[in-house]
Length: 161
Image 1: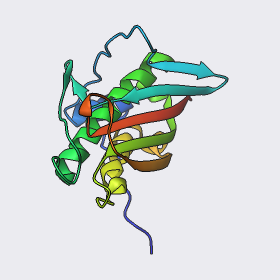
Image 2: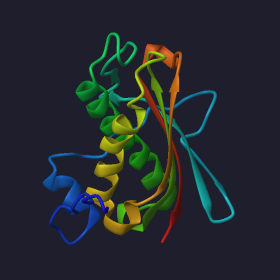
Image 3: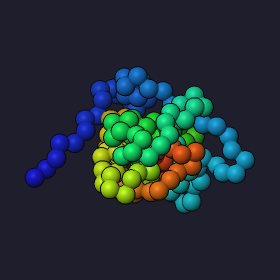
């Protein structure tokens, strides 16, 4: 049985598809301790991204206790958008970004078990914006806690095309 795949939003470029979704890439905050990305060979390793928007963390808590699934999915989309911003910093243009792997951490109760559904929201955004370049290998992990009590954090590896 084959599952339906997310559709790419209409538009000639990834930037146009992003705009069609009503989204813009954020400006990432500087940090004393880390960089948003590090290139090793042809791989670009992106630092973990939390669901920040305009410098504000959009949610806190544990999924399955304080945070509903739908809210966690929206937060995962924001974290993925931040990761795309880091990728564009690395390669210079959204159309040059190819996602290789996504690792998503979900702060969740031990019995939550729907981490992959939280991750699906981020995966869908990547495919909607990047098309085939947004398809990726993925791991979704439930954890006891994340920085700033965020419900989700996303780390990616990408490459330039």
